[in-house]
Length: 172
Image 1 (tube, rainbow, N blue to C red):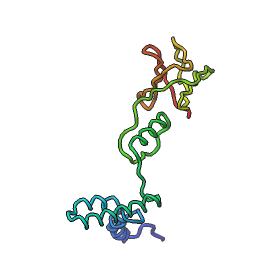
Image 2 (cartoon, helix red, strand yellow; image 1 turned 180 degrees about the vertical axis):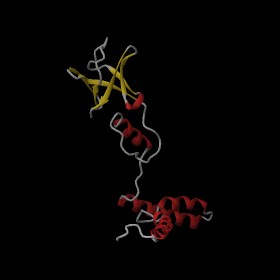
Image 3 (spheres, rainbow, N blue to C red; image 1 turned 90 degrees about the vertical axis):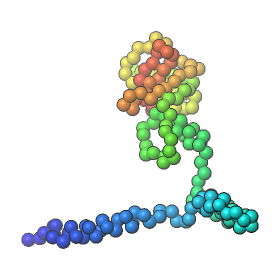
Image 4 (cartoon, rainbow, N blue to C red; image 1 turned 90 degrees about the horizontal axis):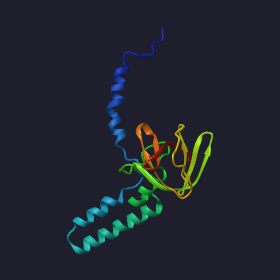
């Protein structure tokens, strides 16, 4: 009879798992990281050596930037990108640290009522659909400033005024 799980299998698995840390620590990048070399140059005291080190590090950094291996991103650009995707279904983290905003303030460009509720397009082109059948004392209209807040369990609330709010989901 054929045995699927041979007696020596635990020994083979042990050998494989012993080598996993070695495989996991291999670098994924193809070239050296120029940033630590650039920072290391600050520790040199002599002027000519220090200048030569900075020249070499700057050249390596310039080559990495032009080849696309190294990217420089301003914090404000990351914040604007996170703001623009506010309310969209969650994707994997961008790996840049920080957190996404908890609210968004905008001005209504268009608002129209339908059988499914209000469909609101803001000036930044984000489109929000009303969820539920909340009756509003104030109807959304173009030019009105609104605030969209992150609510419980991944939902969002669009606030028209202190007394008028309803649940929404981002369509696009």
